Length: 361
Ligand code: MRU
Image 1 (cartoon, protein in one colour):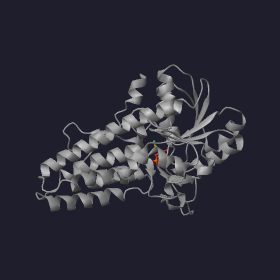
Image 2: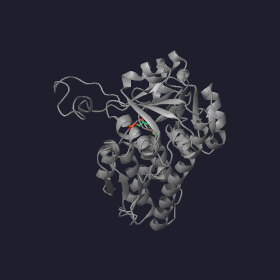
Image 3: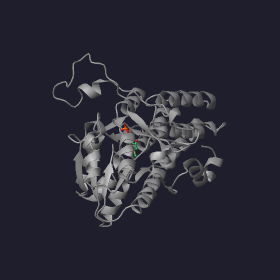
Image 4: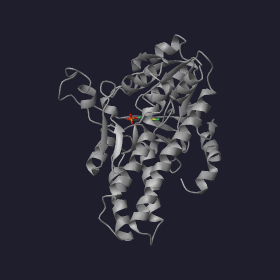
């Protein structure tokens, strides 16, 4: 398999006729490669809620295209009614998942385009929204590329990297974030070894991360989540690279459930723990991790989803939080497209992004 086929995965884009969003259905991987073209509001919402499209940056890109596609269906021919429709679409899509802040950020950006064009005709506003969605996608490619470069500078040839969940091309665009340094290293002939947590309960590590790395010819080994401590103790891990769904102002970071446990283990074994993510994942309006909404999902995902027979009694109570928050004190550095941010995060994130924040969060 050509490495470029993985790093340039056609995971989210506008359909050829420009009236639907085309995605590679991640919920069917690795066993089936199914592309969907979605244009109905309920189908677009469902695609996010059921993780057909997933990973914070990919959700943001998808939401921007989805909002544009839905505005094409608005019957409004006046500015005021069109903007009202845009506001309804924003509220509807924004309710599909709560934790990844990219969803809200990209919907806000799309709505701001419409709201900034009073007195313009609907066709012109729709065109501006299309351009905004395409720009969001292009910017993500550039951010992921920069993050991968910075991430690669943190490791040396032969290093073992522990990953959790999936933060590769499927979850973003181009190289990915948490997996970006591994793809870039492969491109440059630098050997790295990945140990991939399977990531219970939805198995993004097993189903998606090893799917991407293995097909790209990168040395990867799948482990159960509860084996991370052992591989660290055995000296196989030199650094942990994870993605993020929302970084609070003080550096507390929400990512896939189990991430905070990896960070605690890394601290114990003296292994650097890096969070890699674009500025679209930083929420400067959120003071700390206690203010990050954590998605709760159905117990069926724990009991049945990936088993040929249920693994527990049907009526057993389940608790299924989809994310947890890693305390900033456990994070060695946050790797962004603007550079590598070390503690104190509140101060250094603000410095790194000061120009951007003057123009709004
Ligand atoms: O529930 P998911 O699969 O959308 O969770 C995704 C993660 O936790 C990723 O690590 C995160 O979104 C970063 S993707 C670059």
